[in-house]
Each structure stands twice: as structure tokens, then as C-alpha cells.
Length: 261
Image (cartoon, rainbow, N blue to C red; front, side):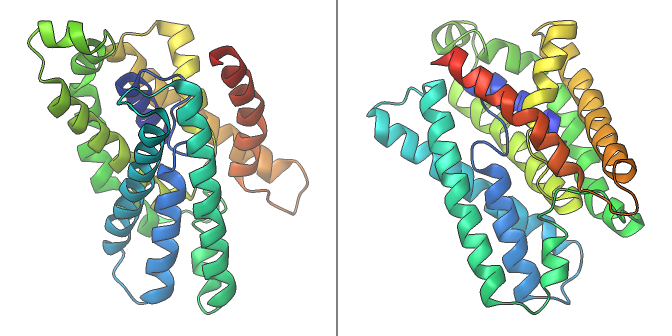
């Protein structure tokens, strides 16, 4: 779901640096999930994805607003968007830490969503995410042709009869919802939404009909490999999978940032 979200964001924004954790979506969802868990410890599991979705949209909306204010236009330069996203994600992360420090009750439950791990995953966590995955992943694949058209640019997409603003909003809604729901099942898995789409694009090209399913598979394999390394590297300690995905993804992000500058 993280990988599909990143692939869709890169297609809509036409920005190779776009991914859920780099443009405020993951951090916003994590902050909202933390607040929800601490404020309502006995809440039903079905409420958490909705809280994360609201936080994901809040973080992403803030990044878009600040990036446009900075540029003074509706264009979103890749480097500008990435830098604003990193700043907003850092600010939301700091707010998250402040909440955790000020409200230690229920800290363990909240931290399980922030470490970026699939450790201890059970049927409860799977069922929390499964309904969202069953709806949103096929929706992303059905939007593949629209993503291809949006990737051609606004003028050409309009000339082909596409309602660009409406389709862009629909695709972004699915992408943000994918990331928000995924956070409730595995925490913030850094750079999965950046790495998997780029690897898929290298393997099968930029057509979203092929690239999206391959991105999903590669994202799952990446998390599985990171989790396996975390379990086997220094037993009996289990290192969260999010640490390994970040260690791999951060240098690749710097490479893309330099290439896009």
C-alpha cells in the first residue's frame, strides 16, 4: 500500500521525489494515529484508519499549501516540494514526540505505530487494514490509464478530454488513503513509497498498468527483506523494519534530490 501510494503520487505530481513519508502524508497519519490512541485507548480498531486518513490529508495539504506559497504559482518544482515536505514531516514528528512526552499513558500502544515494524502482526492488525486494501488497491490499478494521461502534462491531458483537476484530486485521494491506512498496520515505513516505484519503473517502464502491480510486489518484498534482516542480524534483539528501509532509502533520496536540482 505504501508502494502503490508512492507510485500514484509520483504520477499525479509528476515528481520523482514524491512519496508518502517525504511529503508529510506518513508523518501526518502517524501524529493523528498517536493522538487517537492516547485520547481514546479503548476505541474500536475500525476508527484508527479514519483518524490516520484525516492526519494524512492534513499533512499533505499543508505541504502543498506551503510549496505553492513559496513558489507563488500552482507549479510544484520537485526539489521545492521535497524540501517543504521534509520540513513539514520534521515539524509533525516533533509535535508527535511532544505528545508522547506529555502523555506517557498508553505509550506502548502509540509507539507500535511509529517504529515502522510488522513485528507481532496478528489477525487484528490484518483485519484493520484489509478492507481498505481490498478497495483502494484495485482502485489504484483502475486509475492506471488516468495516471498515464496526467503524466503527459496538464495541457495535453485536457486536450484528450480529461477533467484534470477532478482526476488529479481522485488519484491523490486514493494515494493519501492508501498511505494513511498502511500507517495503522505497520507504522511509518520510511522510503518504501519512494524506492519500490523507482525499481518497478526500471523493470517494466513507466506505464502505470504494469508499474503499479510491480511496485506493490516490490514494496512487499522490500518490507519482508527488511523484517527478515531485523530478526536475523543481532538476535535475540529485533530491529524494526523501518530502520532498514530508511538506511537504504535515504541515500537514494539524496541521489534523486541532486539529480532533480
